Length: 412
Image (cartoon, rainbow, N blue to C red; front, top):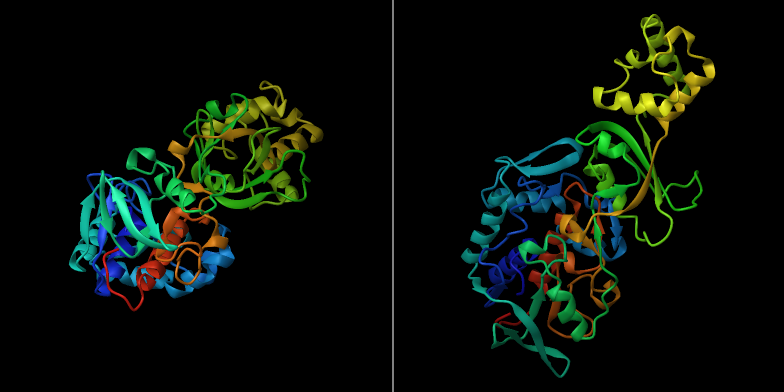
């Protein structure tokens, strides 16, 4: 077993529970390093939904994951962690967290279960997997070699490299003949042109709608359309909506993408216009600069004031219908030019990975090398935020751990 992250810990425990002799290699001095910081240290470990709902939130590899997700569902994951002594709670959007709000509790529970199942943790950087006659025969780590009949590769992606996710597994897979699709950061903050976002830095907007359009794309066909929470930063946008949108944005080599924020998605254009009319009636004797108090958060008012084109000193009762329509349109279509994504070091996950066409979806075993299995972020499958990516890790790890050396007994 290579990699003591989320997938590696669960897969090794499942294999050990079957009576297999399991060595779990980890290059860090501690298991579950990335898991311990996920979700800002709280660990959104799954989503309280059906397997079908997870698949609807998968952006790459949904058909491939169908078997694994139905074999180990979110309910199964929740039951497993509860049985490991980790009480859980469900928050907005079905997001599941440990009741303690401590990601370390999740990592420790997995590590303790693995140890209880006889798994031996060994520190070392695996540099190669050896084969003979098309099957796994050994593993090379730290200048030493260990004979084995099977390996589960759970080395993660290239996001958060300080945690040990440096792409070692991709290189090993390629040396064994596997195809690795292009890697890019996903679920990552986005950069935007101009200084508007910097002016709004630190402002969180809740219950807004974000649509993203391809460069030169049709305004009627957004690449991404979501509702939820958005955060402005000094470089652009972040928060759940921006991270989910990033999963669809693959090419920043040419013209940028266009992000359109509906600040008032609960109101149609006519209802928003009526709302503005009411506010203007309430503040009829004020300057326009002081008439947006009920409509927008304080940090956003100066920006909207400037972009609206309405003179700050204009009396509200003098604002024309055309000016009011321009304000309404600005609130419904607050537009940003997206120029790129932040680096992989800031990404939640890596998009891309070992080609799914070369992996058996029921066992996670390589179709090219017998005894070689994959689980977790290393495969070319990913999803939106909300606990769905960790559920993919649990489901693929469970499938691999339960099927590795099925019917056999050996170190792996």
